[in-house]
Image (cartoon, rainbow, N blue to C red; front, side, top):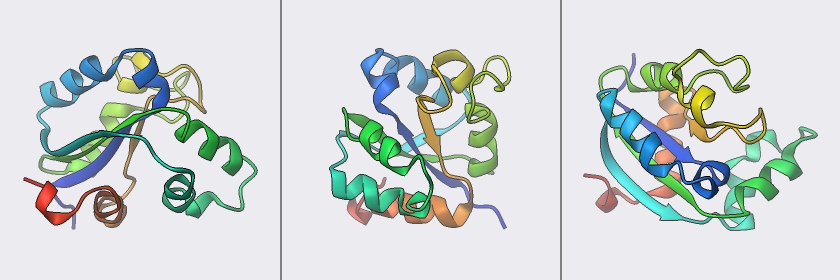
Length: 139
């Protein structure tokens, strides 16, 4: 069963390159409602915990270093079929393989610095949203 919420982060590369507004415009123009959002920076501990599923992978250290190098925008989005629709909107992890018009095709530089994170399941959307937001921060 799909839910109507997903989680996203605009990653440090997209923030550094001034793409926050354009990415948020693309998200809202695609019918998503922002129900929680914050501009923040992940601590080393937060990044290690958030990406803990990748701890044994060779890219884990680089991922944590990248995600802590600057601010991010974390958000919970609402729309029917949110996870699947948002994954389609952001495109393939590798922007070279992403469909035209997707967020990663437009704003990502490479597979490592790919502009945005999007939850890959309803379960992970709930976990990731709760990691970044308390219940009173979600509207």
